Length: 226
Image 1 (cartoon, one colour):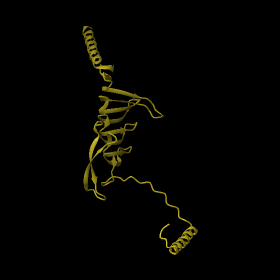
Image 2 (image 1 turned 60 degrees about the vertical axis):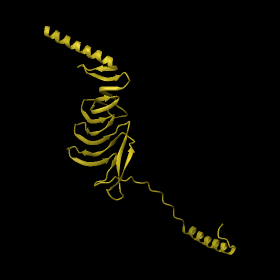
Image 3 (image 1 turned 180 degrees about the horizontal axis):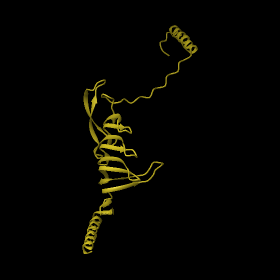
Image 4 (image 1 turned 120 degrees about the horizontal axis):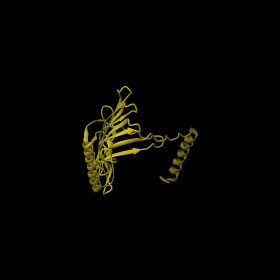
């Protein structure tokens, strides 16, 4: 009995110390049953440390829970997403708030559905050097420094799986651009311009006849322009 009381007293003391330390660092936070600090917001209003986000059902889409780490209000490292029943549906990786590296998504039966590859940029300096290829070849003719419209873009192989776990399709991206099989970027299809309506034969005959009369009149008047 004495040992149990001593153990409980020690646990209470530890939780008290954790609570005092957390209050000194954060203006908002929660404590898990094991004494971990969760959903902490620091004195500057930034999310820090381990977080558990609960998202309810939205417009027919099922709700979910996700857990991972925040650093200065940005997601970082691995994040796990679960159904309301606790089944895992996604393993995502973040860098400076944007997706970076391999992301895995699962069916509600736990089977791997697709695997995405992303590249994250620093949102404070989202620039990158990209190669420019020659027309009709894979030869690099120059490099350009560009600014990313998003600081996280598809980059690498995206793999899609069937229910048996076999790959059924692979898409390859280079800094957000979908690549052709064997190299080269998929061209964006241009919208076709409406074709000019053909003139009726009667109109063509009239214009031809009028043009001949106009030329003859110009020759008689000695004029070369209107």
